[in-house]
Structures are given as structure tokens and as C-alpha cells.
Length: 478
Image (spheres, rainbow, N blue to C red):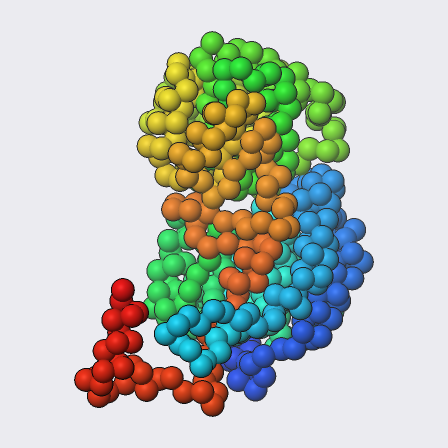
């Protein structure tokens, strides 16, 4: 008979054994050659492409229904492109970089080597369990590391396919998959990783960083926050809405960089609501049976959103459904059209917590400086969006507001940029991945100084009272 709790204890034991085995592999072979990394990435690409239908179906099963195109566009295609991008540039990234020695180091050579950190831990959330598992994995493998992936307990069907996919490409000593609930996750963060990569909420991110601190493990935290959309006074409203609505509706808004609230000129609020309703109905006709719109992942998340909506309405907010004003979404129905909220205040949960779903508050302003001050007074967001064709306003927002990333007249798509870093700032995270920044995140830049036959170091060694040494110091300090 199985004792209560023995299953996770067994998982923790296996997790430790796998970690120790990977550490041993790093000791035996601390540097994986370019050909090894290149071939591993190619095998990974082939496996993702081959299992794409199974991954789409599994993720839809985990959600109750997830639009296959959401998985294809937001999970599968970016990974294939990221692998292609990485493989084409990997040899150049791995090449030791010569650096300038300067006059004080005459007679030496200075080279920076990119060395694998060792064993990397990656903690994966439920909203994009394919993309947010494999994308950092690509960076870590390219940098020559061994990896342990902690998958979300809320996506068991996707995990099953991912586990099989990883097993086809890697041995457990190269990349291993861990599953389990909260206690397993906590034990995972306590392992002595050489780098820990976490994607999730700011609240849990703080706990991950605290656990990593005991081992002085460096962390990359990809968190969330409340990403605003600023609409200026002159931009065409239909165009502005067409540029932001996909970012809110993809995966039913369950995205860390989804627009979390809109800052709109007060006199344009009604125009925004009507434009959003028109655009939503055009994108998702026959909403209840539309195959392009995803559900809220589970009852727990639907209940959380229902309580958040009720809290706002009880405190005076007004609701505008993207479809039928009379239709009030409930937790029993996990397929929600966007719910626009006006007359929101700071004491409402919808303005205090990351929404992560199809609720969209509208905050009005009289003067553009009010919009800037509103954002500056709050934690720095993961994404910042501006709908404006005014060059002066674009410059003002870009230079005066902090955010992990920014989109002008677009939302969401900056995340797909292969040749640019993605990451947060402040409460929305720390560190980057994607592109060469991802390679550097999982590498240690090791400086190597070499002195050959010509030794000039006597010029800076005692005794210091020699005239030529005094002259040398005078010349360097002039």
C-alpha cells in the first residue's frame, strides 16, 4: 500500500539522482563541441516538427479547448525559427573574442571565452508549456549546458508528449524532465543549479529567487505584471484596436505580455469600446463554436477571473461585453469573450493583480502627461504598448517609461523577434533570453589573459623608486 506523500518523495529522490548524474557529466565533459550542440538542435527541430500535431492536440486537451492555430503560431513556429536562427549563428557565438589590452597590459593577449555554466534548471508555466519549455532549452543547449525541465502540473497531456519528445532527442544526463506539484517545485528550486530560469508570476518569482539565494544560484526571472496600452489623442481608433486586440485575444488573454489595461483619452472611451466590439465580432464570428478562440485553461482560473470581475462590478465598475452586453460570463463557462471594464479604481483587484485572461480595464486621462505619470507611479511592466503616429510622443514614451519591452502600433509581436532580447525589469523580471542574449545568459564569459615572451610587467612591480617607473606612472596618469 502506498503511503501518503510517498509519490512526491520518490520524485524528489529521482530528481536529486538525475541532478547528481548531470553534475557528474559536466565534471567529465565540461565543454561540448560545436558539432554536438548543432546536431542536438537539429534533432530537436525534427522532433518538434514531427510531433506538432500531437502537441497541438495535447495542449487543447489540457485546456478543454485550445485553438490549434494558437499553438501553431505561438508555440511551434517560433521554436522552429529560433532553432534555425541559433544554428546559423552558433559557431560565431562560440568563437573566443579578442579584446583590446591597452597600454598597461603590453605584451599580453586578452580573449573572452564563452563557457557553459553547467547544469541549468528551467521552470515552465502552464500558459505556453511548449514554447516556454523549449525556447529557453534551445538557448541552454546552444550554450553547451545540461538541463532539467520542471513542467507544470496543470498540463499533464502536453507534458506526456514533451517528455517523449525530449527522450527521443536527449539522454537523461543531457536533458531531463521533472513533473510534480508545489512541493516538488520547491525542492527543484533548492537544487544547486549553475543557473535557474523561471517563468511565472512575480509572487512566485520572489520565492524562487529566495530559494536560489541559499546556493548563490544566478537566476533569470521572466515574470509578468500589468502591461499597459496607451492610445493617443490622434491615432485612428479602428487601427489602434486592430493592432491591440490580437494581443488580448490570443490564448484568451492568458499571456504574460497581453495588454492588461488601456489608457485612453476620456473623450475617446466610447469610440474605443465600439471599435473593440466591432473588431472582436469580425475576428470571431459565431463565437460559441468559433475554432480560433481558446478557453480559459481550467475551473480554478475561471473562478479566479469570475471573482475578479465581480469584485470590480461590486465596487462600481461598468462592464461592456465584446459580444452581448447582457451575457455575463461565469466560471462554469470557460469560454469568455473579452469583458471591457470602465470606471475602474485602484482598490479593485482587476487593477492590482495581473489579469491573465479576457478582462480589459479602460483608464481614462485628460492630458497625455497624466498617462505617463500613471505608468511611472506603478511597478515596471513586462511590456508597454503605444498606439501613436506622433514622432514626439513615440520618443517621449520610449525614453521616459521603463518596461521589459515595447511595441509601437503593435502588441505581442516583439516577443517573436529572434534577433532581440526578451526580458523584464523590476517587478516584471530580470535577465534576458532569445538571440545572442539567450546564449550569453546560459554562458559564463571567462576572460583569459596570456603573456608570452615579451614581459613588461616589471614596469609595475617593486621596487618603485626607479626613475623609469616614476616616468611610466606619470605618463599614464597625465
